[in-house]
Amino acid sequence: MSADGTPQPLRGITAEAPAHSGKRVASTGKKLGRPFGAKTRAREQKMSMAAELAAKIVDSPEYFASLQHRAHTGTLPPGIEILLWYYRFGKPVNKVEVNHSESRHADLPPEELAERARELADKISKHNSIH
Figure 1: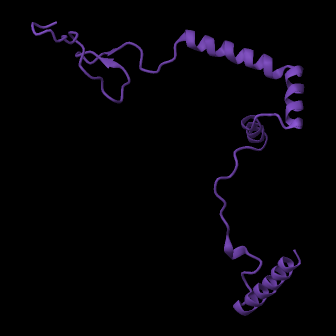
Figure 2 (figure 1 turned 90 degrees about the vertical axis):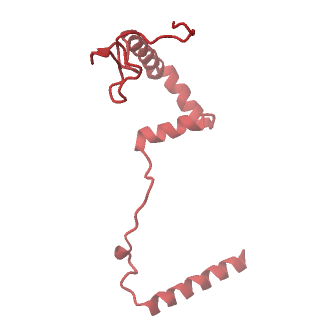
Figure 3 (figure 1 turned 180 degrees about the vertical axis):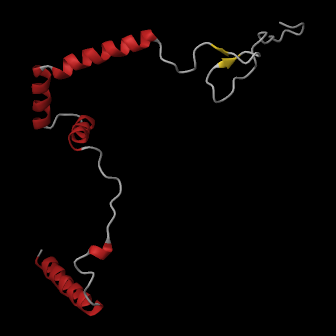
């Protein structure tokens, strides 16, 4: 500490590391220690143990029967059901592109399209008046 009580920086270490490196850097330019966010062996071992435990649970016939029962009775949480659909069919399409030039009505003249629209409107109004 200095005379006024403020802490002194460590000798040989710059105050800030370059943003791109992820490591502290000594004033000599050498990197010090493990990069921020680096995985340790202990963490990797814990993750592999968790993955093994999850595999034992999920792969058991009892759990699969329970999962099927909950799905059939409607008590399966919605998030799990969504995941099942995702794993079975893949990610849903976020954007659908419609190519209007390939429409079966693209070649019709405007008068015929207008006539078809009137026919559909008549059918809709008859249907609505019945119900």
